[in-house]
Image (cartoon, rainbow, N blue to C red; front, side, top):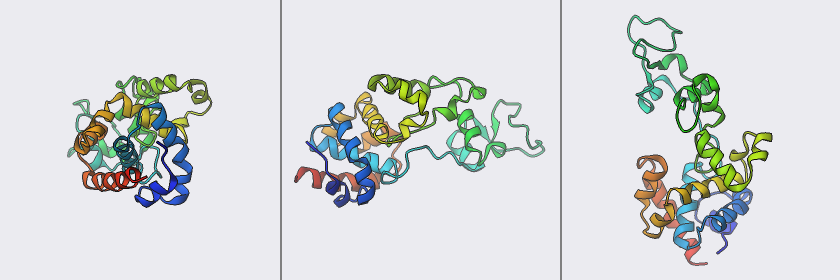
Amino acid sequence: MILTIEQLVDAGLADRAVAAVWIDGLNEACERFSIDTPERAAAFVAQCSHESGHFKATVENLNYSADALARVWPSRFRRRQAGEAEGIMRGADGKRIAEDYARRPELIANAAYADRMGNGDEASGDGWRHRGMGLIQLTGKSNQMAYLKQVGAEEAHREDPMLISKPPHAALSAGWFWMRNGLNALADARDIVGMTKRINGGTIGLDDRQKLYAAALSEIASA
């Protein structure tokens, strides 16, 4: 089974110029990671399209406001309390002060992803270095290095730390994530809710994901 530019365009997953950039990587990902039925391929490209803003965003956007930091990572960030000085970065309770990190993406990544997913501490810079990249954002040193080892791209990554954000690796890393997280089985069951939860931990954007999947399946299954 081979995906085509026309299928991506007609399903509303990408415009023609963008589809031309990604089609080879998507087909390679499908071949490598057993995304080999219309149901699997439709689910894969639909989820990739949603996650990447129609194949246009391949690096995590960490430009959070103070409110967003406290909402998204409540265990790590909190709003400044009355009487607390500016610029202290961390309160007596150990939580980082959201206002002092807000709109500072590198600091946010290093704080939010410190000491997990194989990353070092906040000062190591691993959070920023291994922030989410790819069509389905692969995050954390352990995940990214495991993927690079699987596809034999460790040396290329040393030369280009942004490798996973670029074709074909943004697509291949999404395929690797898909296989590793058992998403083919959920695709076989047409379980869009289950797939969405496994990809982002909730059901954010579910309506759009379902719409893209239905359109993609119609195009791919009729080929």
